[in-house]
Image (cartoon, rainbow, N blue to C red; front, top):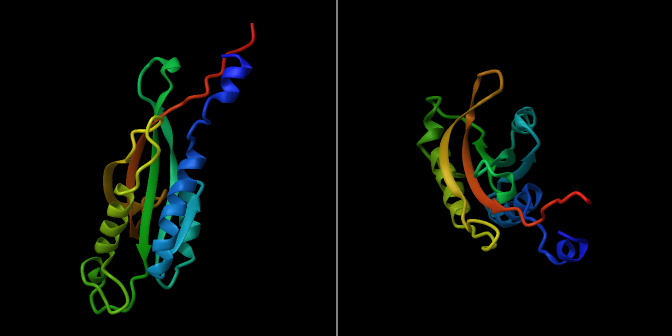
Length: 172
């Protein structure tokens, strides 16, 4: 590609742009539900954020890397992986674990909150033409720390197929 072609091509939707879009989309809803939204740079940072222990609930967005869709690098089709962690304080319940399934006066149960966040994210539509449009929901499971300790949180993985429009060609 020459400089004229690459300068007129639309910019690639990279991980930072994806996280900015998701943050902008989720933030008003999370705040209206009296929650907090954070971005984490790695699993250890997730622990730091969870240690802050907000009064409400917390949603954490994290980029978990990308993978090529084919063995042909020039194809420029990649899967961006986004991790989403949802947590809330346990509160004062007679039985530990009740917060998973029993809501209280101020908030839904943790599993209900995970479902709300999942459904919200599945409803977001990215620009078509350079993405698959919607994220593929892969799983939800208990969040396990890097030290193999479970926490009162769940992690979900979403994947978005992205076409990289900017192709680097070395000068000859």
